[in-house]
Length: 115
Length: 115
Image 1 (cartoon, rainbow over the protein chains, first blue to last red):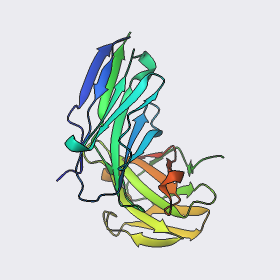
Image 2 (image 1 turned 45 degrees about the vertical axis):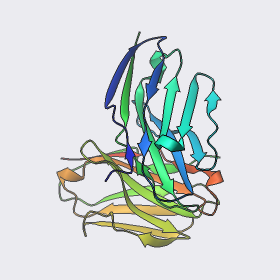
Image 3 (image 1 turned 135 degrees about the horizontal axis):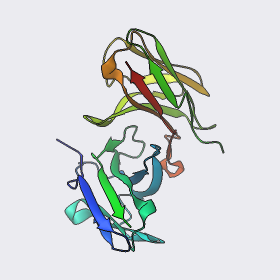
């Protein structure tokens, strides 16, 4: 079974629209870490955020915000007022345990922002 | 901090040839990971090292793949002989496992094409 599910394969939005990327995870560990990475067309993996399982506070960083809800095992990512430069593939990932050694990546959501 | 450095960025080789991918982790990080990204399988862990020792190589697809980490600042992933199905982007990542507070940093990847 997939530990991280990103049900949205592709999303297209018009510039300045808000968009939410969904992420649902599965783990039996009480300690775990959730991540979002951005992969632009150039191919590198760019770290966006890390969240540990004991911190359910939502976070905002500029136009980006994250909603972590343990009750629904979700860690959704919202981009406000999207821009063309936001076009990329976004990956949600999970590391289990306090010294986990392996990322479990979702299959990614390809976001296209249309000018 | 130069980040995780991978070389080469792009490699095109003929089927049957030996290919060596290189990675320099971030200084002070004690774990190193090799991932492969393909359209079909997404991001998958091939092998990881803790303190230069291979811990889990269960993701290595077959005997044609081998990885070494002779010291804390260098690792190689070798494919011999290469096959067209090995074409993928190979990422190296490093982290300080005892504290994920230090995060997990990916290199820019090596795009391998086997023709």
